[in-house]
Length: 475
Image 1 (cartoon, rainbow, N blue to C red):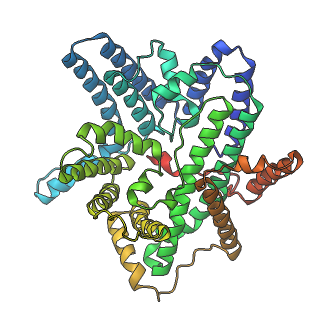
Image 2 (image 1 turned 60 degrees about the vertical axis):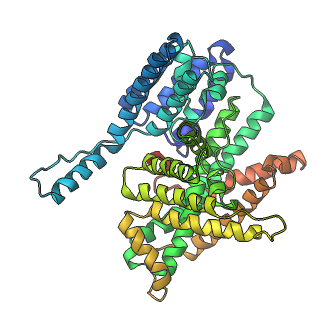
Image 3 (image 1 turned 180 degrees about the vertical axis):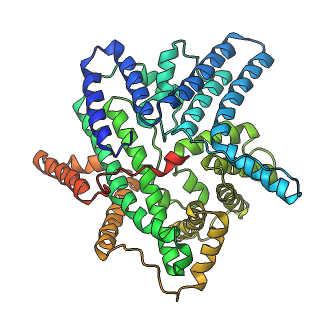
């Protein structure tokens, strides 16, 4: 069930209404049932995988808490990690592993033919497995006490707003919230709905419109000019932000309506002044997950520069693999890590020296990120390489016909301007609700209605209303 589908627009109001009508002590049960119903709308059988992940991490956490001997506790933790990583590897990386083996056998002239497998990746598996692993590791580290109620823990893993694409929450925040009843509060509900509205604007008006142009160029890049490839890369960078941040806004807003606060997942990433700062602003829940559960255990920045650089490269290589079972994702991750290593090697500014203007730092960072975005979006690493070569060398080639009309271009340009204004407001530590609250109630109501109508009119709904999936569902 997609957030931008008619089914969800029916599902969510019913869930919310019933949630506030039923007795407080059983509201968490209602959320658990509806969360599994939400997930089973894709493939019902894959709910068994989520249940298996839930039961294994729940039992392992209880055993970790029960045993006192460190070696035994660590063995239980390792078993829980291996089970879940093995589950993820089977569904996500089996095809890649078999392909690598086949290439090696072919290179060595060995008469081996690996079977072709086609395994459907369960929606959200990377997200809920990481969330469950963080809970189990936190119990091992003594950061949280294990939950004794299996079904309350199951709700923490399956909570429907952030189930399939995050934010990847921590148990010390979400587990306590989902098990407590929350009463209806008009202002909180209104704020949550407005956050959802912003998410729908970014997804169906901007991201899905931008996708039309981006797909036309990247799917037919051989016939595109260098200028068109460059423009499509810029448009994709905005599309990727609006698609994923849009999902996060809808998830955060929906949870807020129910009285549950989720963590901020995006913080104006294209205002970043360095690649490191970019990753402190983009997909924050995943970046902090890798920091806390991989980078810190490796030693973080302690020791020599070489050790710190190695740790960074490990983290971003793993991040690339997390995003997909393809060489382009590994290279994309390693490139992001390498850029941060280079930044760390740059000499620090001495007192009294003139600093680089902030706008220059932002533009330079965005330029570097755009290069990585092209690799991320390209169909393969080789096509990304040739597309990068096109940009400075083939500006005179006749452009590809994309059927992206002048009216669509104008609409997208206006939307980009509105998005920039919103991001700038947020960068100034303000929110849209803070601004609108200063207006008379009648004006606020008119603005809210106008925003809804604009999304309905200018949203990309597809023929017969075919809701477009979110980009990060594939991960």
